[in-house]
Image (cartoon, rainbow, N blue to C red; front, side, top):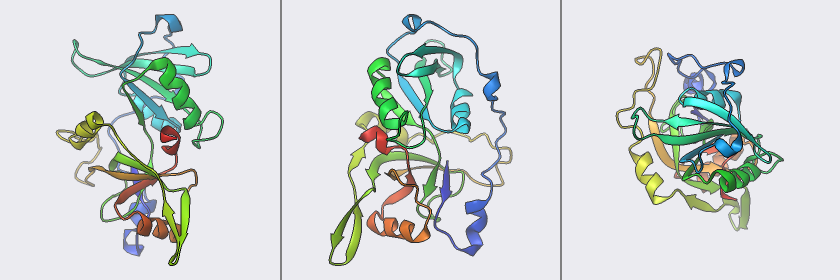
Length: 241
């Protein structure tokens, strides 16, 4: 989900207000499954690995997992497994994990991804979380943002015109790119009041770095350096490091 970071007074409700209310009830942490399996009984490799940081992100993913169970592996911690899909014959095997906030801290995305990919051997890895929109005309509070390419913003170079942000850009694979382009086709967001606010699925360049950008002047600098970026977040750099 995104929250817009560039706005004037008239759109301040979109920035600081609540996101659209949904018509589903997420489980509490205390309601997570107690079903478990020994690691040797887990069917590996999996199809999709989902990584989250906040409890709300984790529970939002957990809600959609069919037949969840948990297992434990030293170096990974507790991992929740299950499947996606309504077709009884073709289901995707999914693993869901949490990591610490900050890509390079102990237990952060950099370490977790490295260890998880080695053990789980997923076909795809997705970070699920919140981000900030770079332009209020493109992204609204509650929109779903999918990264077609991830660009780091933690590096700067000095030019005659002053400092300029630069970074490394990593596109998603061709297969994933084809999937996310049509991700919103036929999808009806589970909103309590669909007519109150339209939720869109947006695809584009997403900025990622180790610093949480809150100052408006710094965001303006990023907008000038990365005019095509639609959103910014702080966890993905660990995935591409």
